[in-house]
Amino acid sequence: MARKKKNKIVVNLDLPKDDSTMTKLYGILFVSILLGMSTAVVWATNSGFIPTSNGEPMFTNVACGIITGDNEAFNGNSKPTYAQNESCSLLQDSPDVVSWNDEPWEDIILTGKNFDVPGVDPLATGGEVVVQPLTLTCEAEASGPVSYTVAIRDRYGDIVSPSFTGNTGLTTDECLIEIESIDPGTRYELVVQSNTENEPLDQFTFTMEIEYYDGIPANMNNKSLWIGPEVSIGPLGIHPTIFLNFFGLMFFFFLWPASFYWERVENKKNEIEEKFPDFLRDLAEYWKGGLSMTVAVQTLATSEYGALNDEVKKMSDQLSWGIKFSDVILQFAERVGTPLVKRAISLISEADRAGGKISDILVTAANDSREIKFLEGERKRAIGSYIAVIWTSYFVFLGVIVVLSTVFIPAIANSNSSDDGGGGQNIGNMKIRNVDPLFFLTIFYYGVTMQAIGNGCMAGLMATGRFSAGFKHSGMMILVALVVFNVIAFSPNLIGITAPPGVNPSVGTFMPAPLNLGG
Image: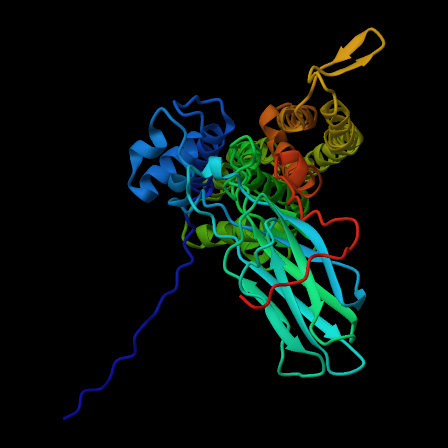
């Protein structure tokens, strides 16, 4: 005999959850402090404020000692050699491509042009051989079939193998010279020769590319400060991991995340306070209509009060479980936690306990709350203009600093660079010493960051009477400074990245000695 299946009774209780606001805040603070300390370590170990025995940044000394396993090489008393730097992925010297595109050469029987090959000084490498490949792509045109040869010769007249010999009009003859490595610091000669008697080449075009090494690690500037890898964003080439960025990020992580989260919490409380007078007014109307507080709250739980909806629903659920109205509204006041709500709830609770005419108390509390919110709104609107002035003054200060960093200081540095004595320029009775743009750029960036913190804290003090309320402004100002400096001020010439010198070709072509093709 089959048993009759019993229906299960399922009861869904929407229990009020514990307030996790402070738990989330502590979690955000923990992560922010962890990130802030991490960025502080990266900045401090690259800034030069922590001295090292070899004069190199502590960051690269420690990192490369771990990467290579050769701690003595990077943490000893002497600077790491070129070979030791090359063994660490952070300090490898990556090449720049030096290109030479000349105007077309015309009417060629025998034509040549001199050029230089840049590169790292062999003395700087400690005898380490630096391979610099050269690639020459070319094209020769003539009215008829003409045999021709393209070669590169050193200053002694010897051809640097391989050369190229081909014929015009033959698609199978690809004009190309590839040299595995060409020595730097030497003058060379590019020679084009027609091998067909009395038949010149009408035109000769070419492109030469040389991989250039300067001996400076790719992620370091000329003063051995960490600049990190270059990231291309459209036409912009930025260094997002430059050590200066970590100074700003340190304060950003310390100040902004927690303040941003708390700002959202305060905004939600403000939204609750905005709807709170309407809730009290509706509650008074239902009470006047003869409904009990329990029924009135349960009825209002289906109304629209914005951010207050969740709290009204919680109050309704608690009343349905038999909790006294006075306890329910006191718990509501504790959850919201604002002085305005606590004041109104205190009046209502006392009136309910005393058995007074609670509808009048509700109306009075609603009017009082609405008046307080109106005054707060007036105060925010009045303070808003002063906060706008603070932001405007910061942008003006930032603009002046950027102009000084990118225009004024480099101009002084360039004017002093030609001074034979190396002591600076004389202007009347004043002597302007030689300046380092990177030094001033660093000082200016630190100043802008401190200005952001000060302006933000002042904005918070004016708005709420608390410095901490302005941390959100400070964080946003720091972020603006990071973007502006990385896009405008942290240019290659200012942060110490030298441009490739180029091949420095001679002014014009000339008639060189004929190529010796017999050897």
